[in-house]
Every structure is written in C-alpha cells, then in structure tokens.
Length: 352
Image 1 (cartoon, rainbow, N blue to C red):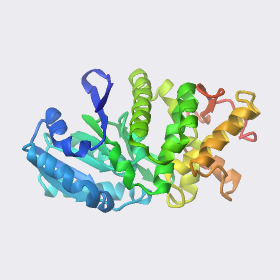
Image 2 (cartoon, helix red, strand yellow; image 1 turned 120 degrees about the vertical axis):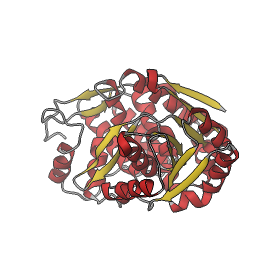
Image 3 (cartoon, rainbow, N blue to C red; image 1 turned 90 degrees about the vertical axis):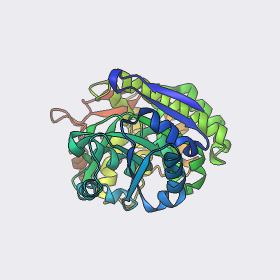
C-alpha cells in the first residue's frame, strides 16, 4: 500500500492507495473516526459491487453503518438530491460526531461531501472513490458541490476529507467509457505539471488500456502527489490551484449546454483540453506538434476531441457564467508546451 499525505495543518489527511483496500477500509476509517456511527452514501451500481465489503470491514472494526443510495448520474448531482440525503441523515439520527462515508465516483463524492460540509454546520467525511476520475482528482482537495441548471458546481464549499481510501482493484469493474473519462484527468496532470509523467503515459498506453494494476497504482499515486502539492500551496484556489482547471471552463460549458447527460465529465474535459491547447497554439504558447501529441493520446484512449454542434456564442456565454470568472473577466488555463501552464484573463472573446 502506498500513502500520500496532504499537509494542511489541522486539516491534514492521508490518501491510501493500493489493491484490495476495501477489505481494510474499516480499520483505516476507525483510526480517524470520532464516533462509531457511520453514514454511508453510495449509488445502486457501486453499492451492489462494493457495499457489502465496506460494511463488513467497518462492522468487523466495531463501527456501526447505516446506508443511503442516490441515483447514478451527473444529472442527479443537485440541491434537491442533497436535501434528500440530509433528510435521511436526520431520520437515521446522524449527529455532529458521526462520520459520513462517500463510496462511489465523482458524483457521489461531490454530493456526499457537500452534505458533510453543510449538515449541522459540518461533519467529518471519508472518500472511498471507485472510479479513476474520482481517484486521481475529485476525491482529493476538498472541493465539494452540487450543480445548478445554469452551471456546474455552482453550489459548494471547501471541506477536506478525514482520509481517502483508493482501491485500484475497483478500476476493473469500470466500463471502457468510464475508464477513459478518468484518463482525461490523468493526462491533464502531465500537461500542466509534469512532462516526464506525460512521456510515461505515452510509453505505457498499452498497459494502461489493459488496466495493469501496478501501472495504475503508480499513475494514481503520481496524480495524487501532484494534486496534493498544489492543494498544499493554494487550498482555496486563490492562485496556483487554478491550473488544475485545464479544459474545465470549456468542458463545463459543454456539460451545461448538453444537460449534464450527453458527456461524462472527463469526456467534456478532453474536448476542453484540446480547445485550450488549440488556443495556446494560436497564441504562440504551444507548438503544433505538442497539440498533436496531446490529441493523439486522447484519441488513443478513446476520448472525444471535437466540439459538438453547439452555438459558439452560447458556449461563450456559459463560460462567462462559470465560477472561475473574476471581475467580469474570463480566466482560462492555457498550456505552455507540455509540463507547464498559465492562467490568462486577457484573451479576446472572438479568438476564444
């Protein structure tokens, strides 16, 4: 088992990474729990696969578990669904000492984390991410939120988990599409922070597509190390952390305009990264060959790279509603080659 620490003073926590960690989840959770009472939030698909293992491990460790399920899909990451989970917590007698456990992908982690942030002014929670996207990105860093029909993640908070448990064995159960969507966030880290990691991904594409557990464990660990480094320096996204949004402003607009149902988050980010890379090329920040390398990798991984048939002005308007806009200026993350990125707010709308 590998361990990555996120050092945030009193809010510090560890990310545990390995295969078959669900069987050890109860022991890991108990170490940081203030109460023996757990409120587990999952969805029917994930719960049918992994719920029993987590509950057994927790109960074997002397913990008491009650569970509630939310529907599967980004379109259910809503304030209404959060209110239903809060209502269930009240009915089950969950108090301020109880621990919420999010078992699932990014939707479960974001929504359950949001509930933990606001329930009785905040309770502790644990992330057990079961999708690649959640393991390398959304479960780490404390961003929790629900969507609004006008924009993605518009209602949220920064609320760090007590611990994160990443079992890479769960990747075997993902569909090809879901796995590929997670790889979009993996590729993002190479583009913005680590050229050598990007080269490693290029050289191990065959093992990645085979979901080799050793390779995937090393990939998840490196992504978590990179994200922890950024979060430690800029927890609430006042500066450096914004670079983690490469492709997201474009991608969130695509998700919003297609009703959160046509694209997985990682698929929209893949399209957004190509748009950001193309814009960076036009501005002289990135070479055409580097854009081709990024495009080639995403295509090889089975990800979309072309914008759907949407009105360009509608996309731009949706981008301006994004929460990363500051003072009426659109802030975009743009790569400077592979391995470094900048945030710009001076790009002409027509060029965008």
